[in-house]
Length: 369
Image (tube, rainbow, N blue to C red; front, side):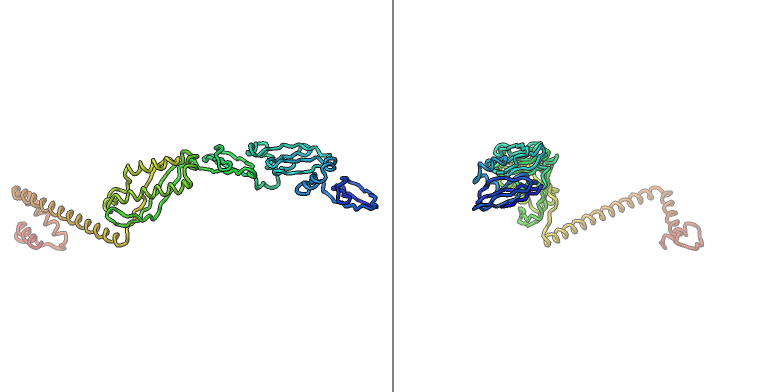
């Protein structure tokens, strides 16, 4: 006799001479083992059946017997399935899966051909969220309010998406999502060594502000759009610097010519980029050149100071001459000026004794002054 005990949480696969013959539920069974070799394989009920390579092997070798005890789900290589067991979502089967479900279970299937239905519906997304772990073969795409996403399938553009969260089957078809911001972006070029018209090497820092106006063109027009924008700005700065001497560059307030800006606009427009603005942040001179410029500026300032000093001296002399003419023509005014001089002088004298009259005092004080 061959005795088999099956627990409440189990079912048992019975093999006779390595051939599947029956499925046993909870209970104790006695099998007559005469010239036959029995083998028992236990299966947990919590798994709802048998899956994986084991299910494929059983279904392939014992098709008739398996169909007697199991509901068989046999997916094609391009199909996946959302499975409900007794009205509740249970699992998501992978491509080409075979699973054997116990007969007493009520199985509902939603089979998906991922070749055409590679984007998950809202209901399917809710099923995916119930899974213990997020499947690696499902691509999640998050698009914020100031972004736009572009979906490619096997390298071909399919659609654009506005803000939201989207899920895609990514196991059969290669799905790629490229997300681009619709806001103004900043690109900085720092420490660019450039040669001026008079062969002076300078370093320049510049910044470009731009916005992506045509996302699809930006992605498909060229291999690396970011590098293209960088090079375009670099060439524009080089053209700008090479057209001027160092003195002209420093005098034009770091403003790029209109024709260079227009050319840069057209260049960026060809890849779906809208030009916003460009600025020259700094022009850095070599050490020796910086010392020379400092000396020149210092000499210029000294010359300006001397001119101002001479101008003031000339104005003072002219004022004295005018005063002298007035005093000559007006004795009373001359007398007032003398008294002002006396007032200033006596402010520094502690004691003053007057002899010979005021006129003599004034004469002597003026001489002392």
